[in-house]
Length: 66
Image: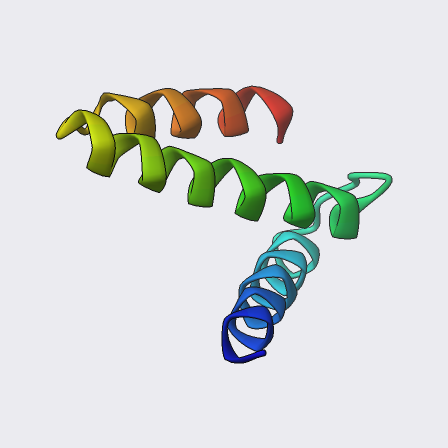
């Protein structure tokens, strides 16, 4: 439950930032879900692979989606 609450905070922060920056994104909440899911998956891969490359790849893909 604590982790779920933390992920909700992350998603809320992403949505608020998008709106504050004047984003015209049709579904900022959906983007926030994707962003958190991609990041958490990339963190897992980075730990297993002992590499920062999954995080760099994740950031690049998120920039393309935003």
